Length: 200
Image (tube, rainbow, N blue to C red; front, side, top):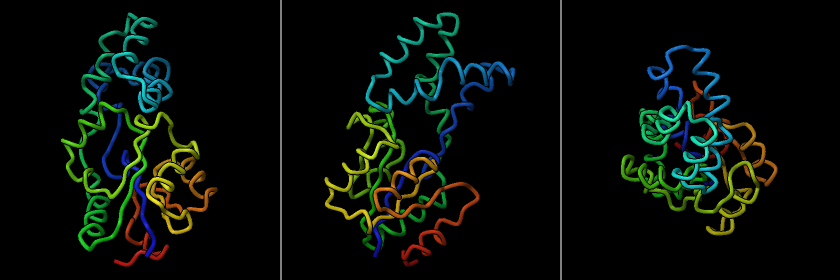
């Protein structure tokens, strides 16, 4: 039986930072500009790489003091950007765990928010192994984070199916010998995993 390795954000739980700012920055163009030029994806990734939220926010406030309240909201209201589960994916995970399958995860996640999400979403504690980018100080799609999972849990790449919403991350997994499922909704995850040999 193949081993399934999940991403977390936008595979198992929804994440959309735009949700935090729809009321704070009602103008669509201004909101888009803010997320492309102030609280950027690259800035957020540094928290996923291990920088603390306190440091990340302080650096950005120093550079963009006129946006201080909006910058702080990215951290303080972060859970508003995570409205809940992707129910079908979680049911697939729980079905696999319920029958005794080994299930793993590799996720780009900050240390602080991961700790909070383990409490908010208890199913995240059910993996047989998780590699969290902030704990390792390396982020997908760097091949090193995939190798950490394979070596730490004694997994063979050829036996693994990696599920992720990022095409770049899927490409890295495939280059290392894993199979990949690019998670783009609408998707029948059971059908995609079945195609790679997972029985349901």
